[in-house]
Structure formats: C-alpha cells, structure tokens
Amino acid sequence: MSVLFLLPGLLSLYLVIRGKLETAFLSIYLPALLLLPDGYAIRLPHVPPISAAESALIPIGAVALYRLAVNGLPSLLDILMGLFIASMGASEAFNERVLNTGIQAVIVSFISIFLAYATGRMIIERGGLRVATVRRFVVLVLLLGPLGLYEWRFGQNLYGVVGQKVFQLTSVHADVQFRAGHGRMAVCFNDSELAGIVFGITAALNAWLFNLNKWHSAANLGKLLGWLEKYHIPGLLLLLYIFLTQARGPLLAMGVTYLILLIPRFKSRRAATVVVAILIALTAVAVIRFYSQYTNITVPGAPMSEQQGSAVYRRQMNELYQPVVNDGGLLGWGMLSHPIIPGMDSIDNEFLLVHIAYGSLGYILFLLLAAESFRRPLVRSWTMQAQEDQAFAITLLGAMAVFWISITTVYMGEQLPQIAFLLIGWGQSIIPESTVSIGAQEQDVHSRFSFRRVIG
Image (tube, rainbow, N blue to C red; front, side, top):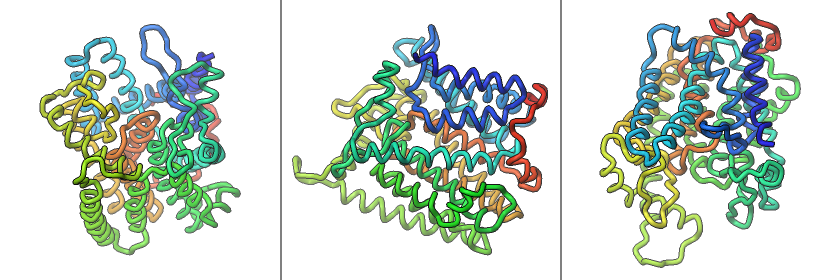
C-alpha cells in the first residue's frame, strides 16, 4: 500500500515533463507538503525513505536547481547553503558509525533543505506565483482544523490511525500528547510544537492576504476567501490552531511576529523597523530574566507543573550537553552517532542539535543562514516602492521570526525543513510585482508550456 506515496512524485514528474511546472508546484507539491505526514513514506531498496512530499519535490527541485546553476553569480545565501550541506556531508561521512546511514541522512537533507530552498528561490516569484502560493498555503492549512479539533477532544491523531491500520506504518502514531486535560493538535505534522510553528508561519503569510484585501488590491483572492479575510476569520482560526497545539514556543514567537507585521502601517519603514527592533530586544531581555527565575529550582524534587518541568528540562539540557558540544570539535559527532545523556534523549533545541551533530563549522554556518534569511527581506522592505511588495517582504520577515525563534525550543523535523527553506529561498528572490503582472498569479497555470520553457 505504501507504493501510493510515490503517486505525488509520478504526477509531479509527468506535469514537469509536460511543461506544467506551476501546476505541479501548486496542485501536487503544496497539498502533499501541507496535508500528508512526513511519515507517509516509501522505502525503496538502497535509498532512504522518501515521503509523498519529497517525491513531489524532486522533479520540481531538479528544474529549480538547474535554473539556480545557470542563474549567474550565486548570492551570499546560495554559498552559505552549499557550504552548510557540504559540512553536513563531511560530518556524516567522518563520524557516522555506519557510513551508508550517514549517506542516506545527507540525501534526505539535500532533498528537504537544498531542493526546497532552490524551489523557493527560483520558482515562485519568477513564475508570478506569489499570490497563488500564499493563498494555497493558507487554504490548505485551514483545512486541517477539523482534524485538530478531533485530536483536542478525543486524543487521537487520525493520520496516525490511518497510517498504522491501513498502511501498516511505524513512522506515524495515533496517540497524541496531553496538556491541561486535552490532546495537543499535531495533525499531519506528527508533533504539536512543529504544528504550532507551521500555523504561526501561515498566520504571518495570511496577514499579507488580509492587507491585500483591505487595500482592494488587483490580486484575486477569490470571493469566499476575500469575504473571510474581510472579517479576520482565517487569522483568528490560525491563532486558534496555535492555541490548540498548546505550544509555548510558537505562541511566544507570534508575539514577536505581530510586532514585525505592524511595520507596514508606519510611513517611515526604517524608523518603524528600529522601534520594533528595540521593543523586541527589551522583550527578549524580560523573557530571558523570567525564564532564568522560572527554571531556577533550588530544592531538588520540589513539586512542579508539567509546563515548568518542561522548561527546566530544556535549561538542564542546554547546560549538560555543553561538554558534548566541546568534544565534537569542528565537524561534530554526526546526527545519529552523537552521545546521549541519560534521561535526555530528546534534544529540544535545533541550534544545540546542529552544534552537536555538525560541530562548530555547521553551527556557525547555521547562524549565518539565519542572519541572512532576515537581512535580505528586511533590505527589500526598505528598497521596494509598491506598498504590496514592502508588506510582503515584512510578511516573510515575520515568518522567519516564527521559525527561528521557535526552533530554540524544538527540533527541526517532519515537513518543517521543507517549509522553512522553501520560504528562506523565497525571501531571497522577492521582485517587484510590477515586474510580474499580478494577473499572472492567477493565469492559466494549467496551460501548456514547452519542456524548454520549464528548464529555462
């Protein structure tokens, strides 16, 4: 039955060959990415498990990679991405106990990180798909609501139930985490923290659609979505979804993001950016102080709530893994071969995990990736002339804030690498809407193009 998970890949390949790259991206890849778990995967001989979304991404990513290669001089982030993947490969090759396992880990990372980045970098803006992509993203994520309410009420993940009973999978689970007497919404992301991050990213993207609708833009949101945006319904639903995950990291990140999303309301974007940056810095200082006091348990064995215990675990994790980080040196230990401190199997901080697995080199590159993913959209928000373009650059800045802040409290797993690096690549390629007619956003993406048009 798991052979069905190859179907998105086969459909995507067919559409790409027929010259319908935009259709493959909007109608095959995005639904597979946002509606199917990463654990819905097929394992073919001698290759790592390939999820439905990854199989759909490969043909699209191959075209994007070709375009990136012939695009001329690489950008700073293109170079950083290449170096990060190379450092990851070196860490796995030199440190994994089983070399084949390390090679497979690098292949999966190349697909889910680099191909997703190349797709965001070369396909969306240049294909005139900005509005279509944001709209499709928001609508698909909103469709997850009923499944999330079922989890919250009954404590069962229906994706896990189907995966285990129909497809005999062990990569998804039906049970969900409970907090405050209710199941935590995870839906197709298999983890409530990861689901909260995706909902936060989607809420940031939806803010741009709301602004387009408010400004009576020429962009076509559709009659129903336009009406819903008028009354803030998608934005309120996405905030409800984040609440149902009961994930504190994404909730905190959303506070920062909404400060960022206020920037387009000011006449002077640069002055507003400075004010928001100061407010975020002051908030960060206050949060760090509160976190330090909240997790400062002076009496061993003192009673704690589940939330406080989780916060204390993260503080101890960051402290106790420092010797492991130091011993890892330049290239680290590898993702699957690093030492595990007893009782701390779960490393709930992607920055710490990267430092452990890929060493100082991978960690520095990861930090530079984060910095550049903020810098480029910020600069574009200052230099673009059209209100819609400025607001979109700020929107991607907000989405980046959700992602990078949240992964200090959780690992980067499931579909999140694809979603995050798709947006990171997108943020590097923002072009004025006047360059690509808004009408092209909703043009006949089902029309036929030559294969040469797809590759070129």
